[in-house]
Image (cartoon, rainbow, N blue to C red; front, top):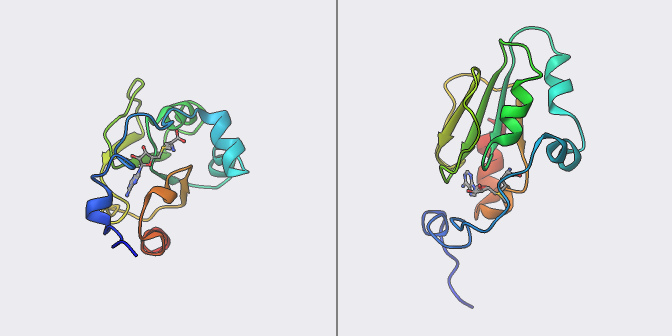
Length: 132
Ligand SMILES: C[S@@+](CC[C@H](N)C(=O)[O-])C[C@H]1O[C@@H](n2cnc3c(N)ncnc32)[C@H](O)[C@@H]1O
């Protein structure tokens, strides 16, 4: 049986760092794939909210979402590849990094990930970090 790649090597491969995958889902596709509406979920909660999207791709869905959320909502898009597009918006920050090493500077209220976790080798480690 061939040796499995560790995550450091996997993140450098054309499987993960390729330019052909769909990184451009918009907000309706996020709603459909997640099975709930993150905008409605955040808007229904009292006080400032923080949303992290892991493997956000172009982040177009996050920019769209920001237009419908209160100004005190903080949205963080995290992606291994800095392929962010769209017009920067207040309240949206984009981070180039891996879910296996990046840590937020404050607690997160909602974490989503759309078609991204399957690119991570150690999915259990990723989910453990996300839930902590
Ligand atoms: C198929 S794209 C989906 C992008 C976006 N969520 C969408 O639906 O349009 C998967 C994304 O996961 C990112 N990704 C893969 N491994 C990652 C990791 N370890 N940490 C953060 N992002 C990662 C890739 O760079 C890619 O942008």
